[in-house]
Length: 127
Image (tube, rainbow, N blue to C red; front, side, top):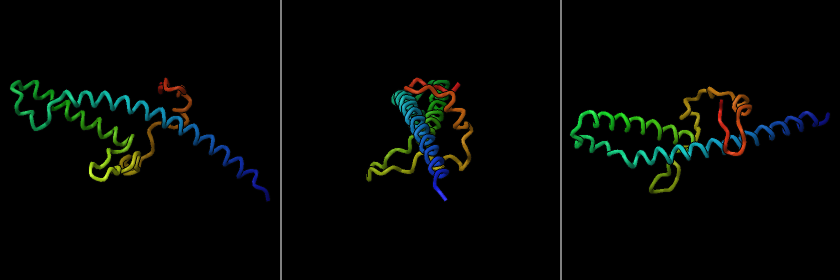
């Protein structure tokens, strides 16, 4: 009894894991770019407790809607990149892509489909 089949399976697994690692790096780069844009918007928006100071009702409603969307965006960023660190301990307040955070559901995108459409070098996109 040899180990040829096991060696082949391990080699295939390593190849797939290396591809996944590259995809994760690309996803992280895109998520960090998105986070920067979202953070820029966060800096421009009033704080939720200051919304009452806005006299214009339409502007207040838009700001409130933008803050709700901002919460959604930051929750997704935390889900992808991992939550921010605890300010006192410096420890992460959870883990990225935690099955609990994902809702313990499989991805809606098949990895093979993503890899087929992924363009290496940071210029990739899913089409």
